[in-house]
Length: 175
Image: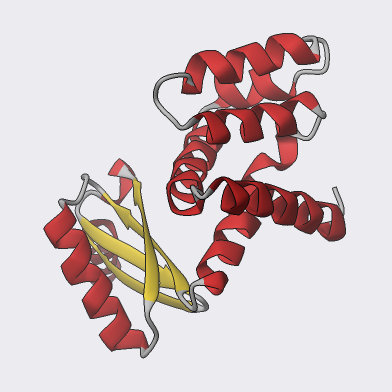
């Protein structure tokens, strides 16, 4: 899908969530859904298979998110999948998250961690990233066991890699 269509969907979803007064919660839920979508071949195939009727794909979304996410989030994902734009879901959601961050004058900070971070750890990390980059950040944490330990943070074009995997790779190259 073209960038203008992705932007259009993102803008529309953002405005709906903002009108509902749930933009912060919906943005977070959508971000986590997009990362799950990217990580699961089965989910991605089910939501993009054109041989499956749109109503059935929407029912899959509602079964997955029902009770675990706000009704706004469920309806927004269902709408995108039902309109045949399932393949573009991560791009649309990423644009929406970027738009939501910009509306709060924050820079998006995507952090990959091997384990879930406590709220205290997230607060300290947010402060450390703001100090390191000079901008206030909207922290989004992605659980990625492949990094083994530590974190990889991306704020705009800046990547801070403090992962165990990278350190092990560096040691291997030295040996």
